Amino acid sequence: MQPDKTGSAFAIALTVWPAAGWLVLTGRKTAAALLVAVAAALVFSSSSGASGIAILAALVTVALGSFHKRAAVLFPFLIVLFGFATALVLGKLDSHLLSLNIGERLAAFHANARMQIWAYYTDFFWQRPWTGFGFNAEHTLGDPVLYKHYTTTIPQTFANLHTHNVELQILLEFGVIGAALVILTMCAGVARYWNDTRPEIVFFMAALSAFAGATLVNFGLWEDWLLGVVAMTVILSVRLVQPDPPPLNTSETPDSAANS
Image 1 (cartoon, rainbow, N blue to C red):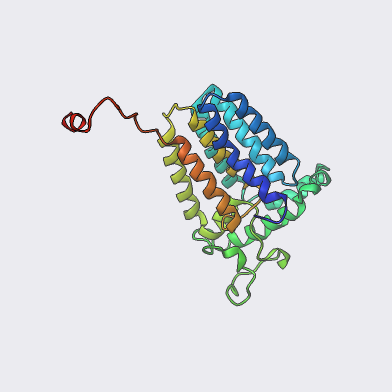
Image 2: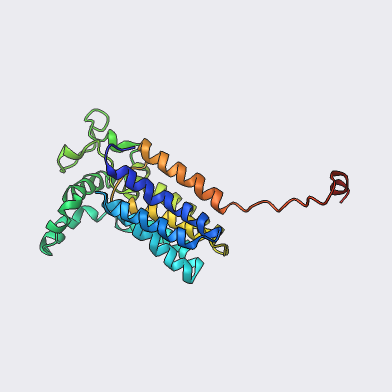
């Protein structure tokens, strides 16, 4: 885990949803609400604004799911689409925020540094927009030997840092083609769960929304600690939505069950 509150807050913001879903399925809705409340309090008391966004995105998903489950299925997909739609303009927000006099309010979340990081990687993206620079390229783009034909006017201060935006990272590493494959995969996921009316699907989607929301403004896909948190959340979520096997009829003998 990261040596600060950010990693722990992110882990809580993701894993709380399959846990809360399990409590709801077993009839303990009050316990589920208390668990989410405690998790939200811990996350918002940390220094992780991204994890706060994760909690808010997941809460919106659960709220939508209480009215219509299809809205909950669609919401994480819409967050990712929003991420791709805005990834290449994030680096230009700095001047607009200054004109609105709200730049200082975002200083606590390192907004200015993030916008410069986004501008740095966006500048590289436009030099190889279709196929990108390959896996984990953000850690090697500053190398003048490997990428001597690619330059940027943005200061090299931000070389070797993760993109702080997963959609921008996908565009940088795998280009428009990679982004299209991600979107098509998510479309297949939406189609898979579109008609699934089980309540546990809402909490599965809440975990997806939490990840999608947090990674709009922080983290990189290939950080080992983040992959560990995601793997743990996936394991819990898959078990949550996995249908239980039908109960075994103990009144049947093995011979009669075989004959039937």
